[in-house]
Length: 107
Image (cartoon, rainbow, N blue to C red; front, side, top):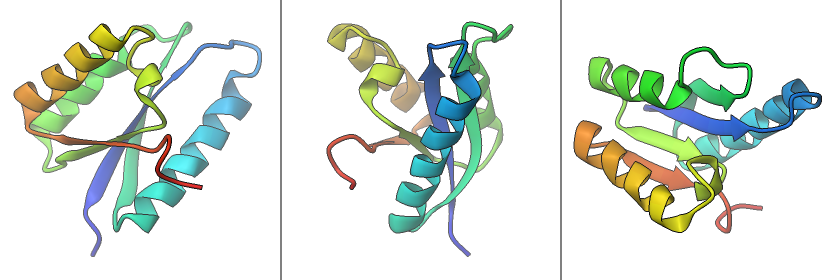
């Protein structure tokens, strides 16, 4: 049985949100399978989201036996490189999870 991996993405466009999210989810699932994982939950940050998906994902990582996260690119954490690194470090320190970045490694 393949280990589970969580996905995380940020979707900006409200009009094309569902189609964009589905396409990204498919890419994450394909990459996860290629790396030997099964994509489990995908936490999606959006302008319509009531509760921040980032913190929901952190709590899920703490409660479950999932130690890997896949993101399409670090931009999905934040636009600024310093904030990207801070969010990445926060995940690693709080949960011990490994972060897989699809951009530049798959296609």
